[in-house]
Length: 307
Length: 248
Image (cartoon, rainbow over all chains, first blue to last red):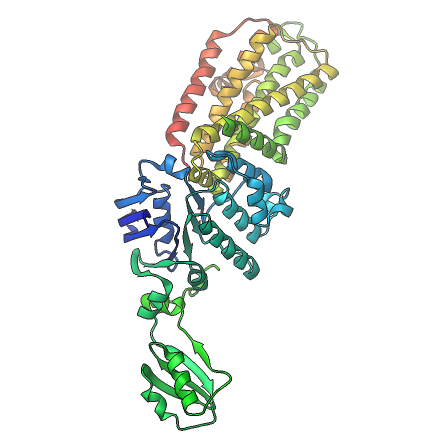
């Protein structure tokens, strides 16, 4: 494994505003790497510095071994970008955009296939202005991929997509990785990060507050897990003897067991041992959402954030 | 080169899909031609004072070619470029390593092509409606056209580079276009303007472009002085535009 992106102590300010304070991480080849964080956390600025669209104030940056500050032109031919605040001319047609952007690259590419993959073939002759939000987003992502880049940056890729299209997009992202490309995904959807990313960095106020695989972060930061079931029995004090169990609460017939470790397996075994086999035994594992809350003190979609 | 060609082709199609610029470039000069042609006819002033001594239409056809050039350069191009920056289209191009030269080059190419189309349309209409004088020295007129169109392209890129929004660019472009229309030689003949108007007219790039076109057209020979002025405007605009061009 080799790092295709290295970033050490990146700092970027706009006047007095510190957009990125101190960010370091590395992305391995073939990884899907997620950058998570609330609005204004510095995710987009970090990515823009990596793309060579903004000059970092300080820090060491390498993408595919190139310095985005001095070798941006060469670098941009090998990466694909879907930018957050960008658009196409209103009256350009879908096929024209793909054809044009395919010509920007160095190699011959099959933009027709790209158009089909992203479900745009039927809209081929529609103008950009006439597309729905989701269709525009898909076109912009398709343009980022049309030249078969080695590293792809997707900034809020699924924003504006309906749930069905999001799932399709997820499959396509996995397909990009299958092809050997590295994906950097900026998102504020925790379920997306958990479903797609091999590793994530949670960025808050210009710093990386946690870095690792989603399951590692969940184990480290998210607090206890919970197993729930229904039982008529009231004396369940023996559950406290199960390793890892921290609390047992009753709410009518519904019982909730909180704790750490392989809770489900151990609780299930203890229940069966006591002759209880509830049909609705369920495991509520904490998610990245809880990690995020624990680390930043905020919910991701709070404060009227644009979905 | 293929990128420039492809961008120019796409931009040309976009130009044709934009009603406002098409009307400004192709239709408006025609309307002005027919109105003034209807009013003044094409009989030369017997005293040889107004319209440089030639028929009004012979005077106005090259002047309107100047007007067509000015409308694509001042109204179409700056608005388009500023809108691209405002909406993040330029940013998107930059992220794909499209050189600024290709972005600007395709705009200039579209300006030249659409100005040429507008001029041919104008000449065809003038030929049908009035028996206007064909260019005296056609090769020189073509050269003058290229120089004038390049100069207004450079001015357009300059406006598009300096003005922050499409709205501002559109406003400034239309304002300049109207000022130049009225006193720059495409409106009332220069001979009837007051001294102060004539002084301001001298400051408008359009007047120089029009004289550059008219002289070889009407048989007054190639005008080297205006060549220098027009080339100077081109060079100065291009240099300043280069200095202030912003992707976002």
